[in-house]
Length: 359
Image (tube, rainbow, N blue to C red; front, side, top):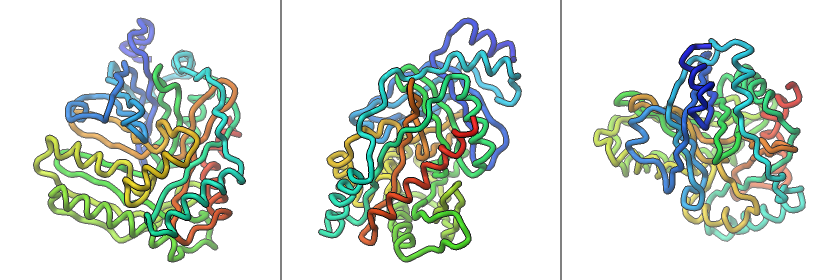
């Protein structure tokens, strides 16, 4: 183990650990540091620092975290014994598994409430999420799960975050929220879900769903006076057991200070994990879902010297003492049906469950 990291761990001058791997990259990273509770969103100073951002879905009622970088190195440089030492510092949530796990009957009830609001013309789209229990994960298995997810899902942002104020979360999600690399910024419109097999083809329902998100992002960028906007035609993105439609936006934002944070929170929560119109969909989610989303459908990612990559936290779980708790959801539109939406969430759950059975 690198001497500086060994010293930091031995001195216990940190409270949080982050393992992550960026999409389509081979290098995995470890970051250790101390967490700061963030209320009402991050600010421009966090974006200029070095560390890791972990934001919830609802930052008005839940706090986020900024984990500063006491030390970081390439994860692959660590030896097996080093990983065993790190594993001891993961924090497992002692609270029991939440009691709001949905069976199909309760899911259908929530679906009908949300779908009726769409039929009545109150909104165009809303995301209904649910939680599902998975097998228990002990501290030593967290590293193994992270490595397996990174190996299986090259397209995804794969991570494990452990902090006293969050517990341990693990995930593999494909959706970029906002990337800043020097003067260029990027985001994506990711929506529409079908099974990832040769027989599945895009229907008007998925195409319309993705068009709604694309139009929202384009209008948001124009409102924030983004320059040199370039965007791709919709392409298919494979995401484990499912695939999505994706449009990539590249642009510039000249007045970075202030505008950048405003744009970030105009995009978050995206229509892909909230709905449209965003305010009405957001309120309907809070009024309908019995569970708290916590960090599910929030965003997270590394910050390095003014550059950052933030991803939407989907396909994720929280580690509890007796079980893992998976968070999964899907977008409802006028053409949605309860049974097919339920099946979609079961497919999405397999992103993690298919790997959990191998640890």
